[in-house]
Image (cartoon, rainbow, N blue to C red):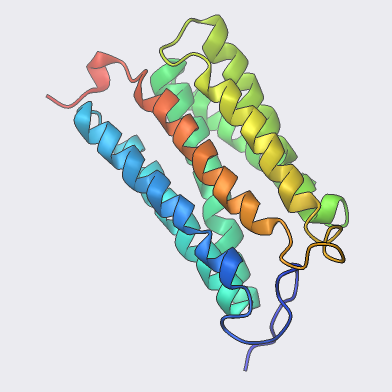
Length: 216
């Protein structure tokens, strides 16, 4: 039997359904994936990079659901792993298809982000473990500024996504702090808000894929 991990306010016992709201809130990721796929299909931009990010959004929902029901170490890896992979994939696709960089520059950006993201994971005791998302927030805001300054289509969406992500991180950070007054906690709001963040980011990406990158 695997030892269960208790990290969130809502979990009061060892059972499979001990975090029902946190578990069910993952529906936001599946909705985001479906909406992203639908939008990309309508605009005929289901290129490999878009397919990859859509599948990773689905993986985020599955991994998070497993962790908030099983609460084991291996389920936790399935929770955090797809999130990191999505971040890396999104950065690469954005740099290649939107910023117009070469593969080497895009790969260098991904490796730089990966190094910073892995370094930030050593601060697990800060903000209820939310410090590991600080690099993603920084990149999202920087891409949002770039997006707006270069007058891209849906120019404000990435900045909106960055602000929403900051709110989502706040919900994640205060989950245990509000527990005495609000036993349900706020982690489920992290899930719900992030579904919107992912769709905003993907809509901004899809709306700016160069015509040369579109399938015939």
